[in-house]
Length: 240
Length: 258
Image 1: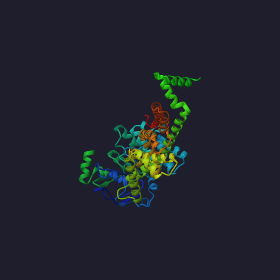
Image 2: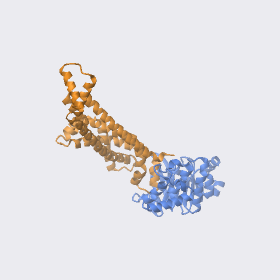
Image 3: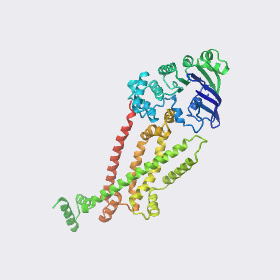
Image 4: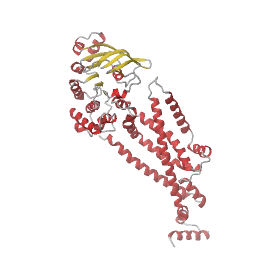
């Protein structure tokens, strides 16, 4: 579904991603873990070109999105993204936050978008917040809304950039629950996270990144039970 | 005999007798000459009208120029390194030159140059004044707007773009509305400064409020009433504008409530 070939990214002299090749298959739930500064967020942000790769190609469903001629907006409409800091639009109500993109991109008429928004809000149990503003919500609620906002575009794949890292510990659960539900429905997901429990339970494949490389990957059971490389062993020792 | 006639008669009588004139009689006499005689208050009103006309014209021109310059400069600064666009670089250099020159020279000098050098043949003084002040204001407004756009978390643009919206719709619906809310006090301040600075257009011979007072002072030889009078008029207009801006700010704050 997403094919990454020889992806490199550097900020000035600093090489963040070093020649990464990887493939993400439909329906997969790929979880990326690793220490901070390992390039995992940059890798994720390259997938929808929020970061422009320095070299390499990324292909989404047969379209080389790194080609400058490709209309990136049309590709991004099919790739939802959830950010660490939610990035809800504070100047709009929750309802408007969710319906803005579907209406602006011509995917839906306002009425249809409103209906979709209500349905999605019900799904995450926040339908009574439709007319609230983001400032009135808790962190967990904001992140659930951010997920809903991305889902309103009916994406084929969802990218999560440390979705629970900015949350109070007691709010992490409600967000992970929504993500698990999404995974159960068969959504293709790429998740950068520090939640090892989530990686083990929900992931179909776990990648370990360090220094701009994918050092090790495996299905979660093996990954956590028998880490092969030393760096991963010491990383898991520290976080588990 | 009406009130004013009796005051004036009393004043003339005392003056002829070379007697000392009571304070209130002298004040009333000055007031009459400065505002009422020959319907001079109409002159102030007309002047005020011109001042407001120039302010509104300059404000509109200033905001249009300011937004354009701010967008060019922000677009240029947000370019990814290595992907520079020559046209954009040229426009950016032009915008920088504009803000540097306009902010680096006094408005009075700009008015003199526009009025007596560039448009010395023009008789449309209001047009010259609007153009000069609008160009001047645009330089300041562009920096205010640029600051406002930069004050918005880049995550807002990223979130919008990640949903598949283009640069312009995200700017229009997400970034600019938040930026405007942030810069409204500064923009209001600029608006008020602009209104007060219209008094400078006197130098190109435009009959604004200040010019009206100067002309009346030249006729009556009385400075206190006309100049204090226009000070009060400027103040009242500014207070009214401040009040209006306060209402607008409270409107825009709606989304901040918890």
